[in-house]
Image 1 (tube, rainbow, N blue to C red):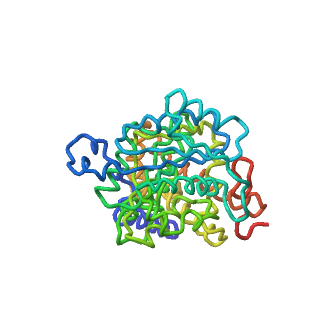
Image 2 (cartoon, one colour):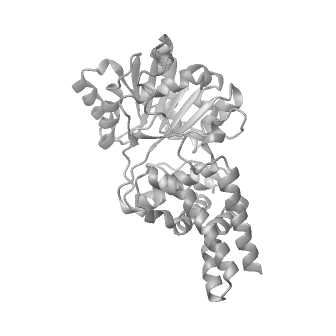
Length: 397
């Protein structure tokens, strides 16, 4: 009876997740590929040619920065577009690679390279770099500021589509969960699940709803109305945040019109390779415990929840078969079916084999272990490590 009770509870949770959790499992919140096809008359108004300043924080990104800079300087965008690259003490020639790319394109006047000042106490490296880039960009009084990472290849019409979405839908923040690289076995196994778990935590529909308190963004590509950024006091308001994208979305949504938007895209892509378990593990470990507010109790709840939601269905089937308990087997199979069905849309979005759709229980185990490891590293004083820096985190020692 105890096993059946857990299986029934897991089933109730899955019914809730699929029916009442903002349809998080769907992939329909996407920046429309046809927003520039001429069928939207508002896209041809003067507002559409709004001025945009792009700010890129970069630390040792020489291998990827040329592609990123080229994709921005060759945007098919009718308005003013300037790119501010903040070189965060790189040692690999990141700034030189960016300048060489702009020079080859004949667009050195659109690229502004800033040498980052030393990192002050209380700031994360990325946000300090963004702060310096934004400060110089503000001198041009742009209508929008686009915050993007140094490893993003932007679709040629990405800026146009972002601005169109912001203007036509009156959004203060338009953010894209860019398409993460999904080529190696480990990427195919774990990257779609990363997006799936993020969407479950921050359902895109709820984040996009002005009446919902949920606020989320993706730091790799976020277009922000200048007035909104000024209103919240700039990125200084979140200067200590490791999960800076969602912190920024929360500040903007809670202080203004509440109109923000987050969606998926298949056209703008991350170039960052995660071709081994170790690289993905490191990415998740850096902020997983931060997401739990460094709380041992929330960690215990997260581990228990992942076990109940993702492992109990499989355990129910195995125990049911061993005990010849048909009811337990059927409930476990129904759980597993609902789990798999909810995961298939993101699997299809990433073009992965349907076989990966049946691996969610094993994937959940790996992500749970990553979360536990994140907590352990925090307790050891090594939390938040990134590119040679370890940031101070609450309760660390």
